[in-house]
Image (tube, rainbow, N blue to C red; front, top):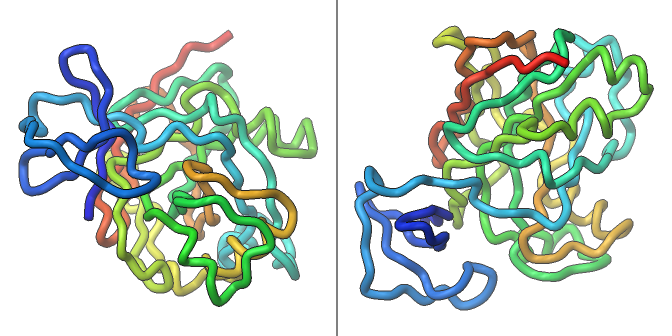
Length: 253
């Protein structure tokens, strides 16, 4: 099932996508999914970020080749950090660069949590997942180096595009994941190359903090990250989910 969050006629709804139209859902998808008889053509709605998360939890250096390109050791356990949820934007929305710094794209599979959980066993972790979406962990490398941590470098408004849909029922263990910039392939991998699997990440994080419906986990990026510049178009493509496209603009301070 593909679940969209969208705006039409000044109102925001969740809905189930089928073909070129979306069927309006009662309430939200974090519970029983009940649809109405109301439909809209996708062409007439604005598809938004698929969720407004309470928490954005990200994972660093979760592909060996990316760790190598960053000249970092592979972490023995998941390296988690927090990002502000105010950084989330949806498909088609511009990523705004506030400084003329080195800023890079990071294609990532994003897990959308579907129900509350704490101390979740790894073998039951996927029971707590609503679905998956595409994410772009846009990162200011100059500020990462300056601050020696990630919060500011990854939390600017618009630095966490997500979408286009939440897709349920996927196996997160072997999905093709790519990033194209201006049509040029930059990242090309599969989630089978994750060092720490999606179930392990969910279980590990839930030992530290309670996960709630709508929380999201950015699971790490493969090799091939590269600088982005005003005028670029970034496209994150994940098998079974679709394409998340965002232009880049500059608003330098």
